[in-house]
Image (tube, rainbow, N blue to C red; front, side, top):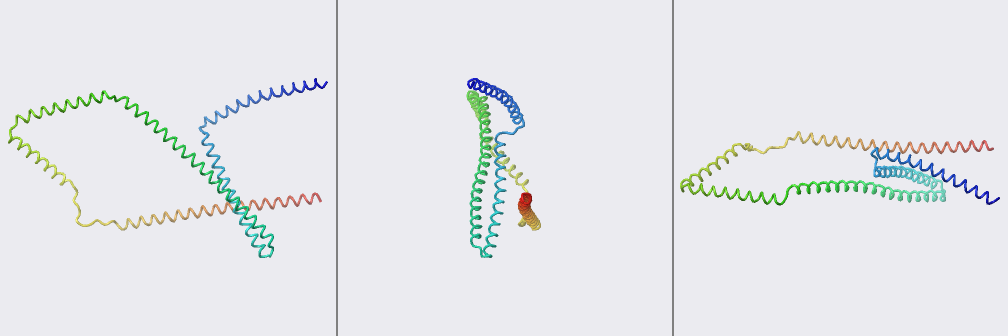
Length: 275
């Protein structure tokens, strides 16, 4: 009887495993389809990784703000207890503050690691693009070199040398038919053309003023005023950003205090109901 029950239980387990495999295979296909759709959307694994790192960075920053708030509260409580003469509780508050400061240092290091990773991914992407550009440029260069063979270059150089030699031969033949006085006249004409060309260039040049040109004072004043206005705008924008951050911190503290008050009220209600 026990063997029969054992065989039945084994059969049931095998059936459940088979059904699970079928459902998991179907789910796997759906997951693959969803993955393909996500890939079609143009979001790469690198984009997902960077997004996750940035989200973690934002969480760490918010956590740092909360730690600073806790440290401030512990310091204020320690001061009040010192005034009241309660040394033990004041030391306890300071120990809590010290612990929070240790957490803050660890958070700073984690934040630095996250930012380093984001920067490393960005730089690796730049290096990849540079490598691809160099690779493409090398391919184009090889293609250009393949179109220009060494035989064609040698042939062109030989033809150029022949043309130069032919031109020199013609020049020698022409110079042989001219007299010494003709050569002198040609040299004088050449010098005259050079002088005429130089005179035309001098005439086309602008006249240099005799007095020194001074920079307009009004233009400098306008530039200084614009720079001062930009500095004022930048300082105003920074102050507004700081004000917004302080308001957000205050709102978060108020929400935490409201949640604590609500929890206390619920606890009191529960105590009353139990009573």
